[in-house]
Length: 149
Image 1 (cartoon, rainbow, N blue to C red):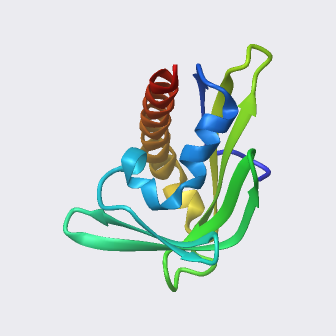
Image 2: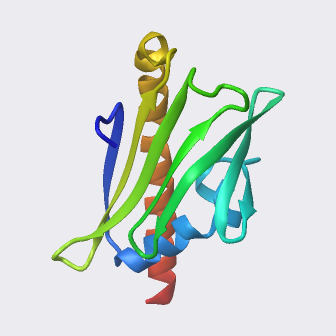
Image 3: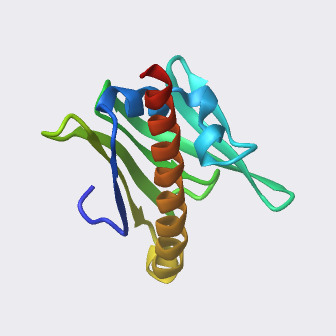
């Protein structure tokens, strides 16, 4: 990712492994991403995100998926048939801190012929969504960690 149109960082008071377990459990993403999210996988890698905008299902096809266990998940996502018109490159990362806690980072950059027209609108929407997602993950992780104590 060369530029970031969206960047959200959240400090979480748990070890990075707790947050990684939440991020890498694709079947449970709707716990923090929102109800109704489905992830189709190819083997262990996500291949498609399916969610609803109002009554309409929306599918985002994922390519160039890269998972670095315990650290990050990256992909390129686009609507079917959108090709070079509009796509995003998303990165979710967990970084341990010196205090034994971690930082959750979500970043996205937009590309394609339509990106100059839609960048500002998409950036605001995704910034808000990723902030909410990070707060949801923080609450889940800290709740799970407290249960273990």
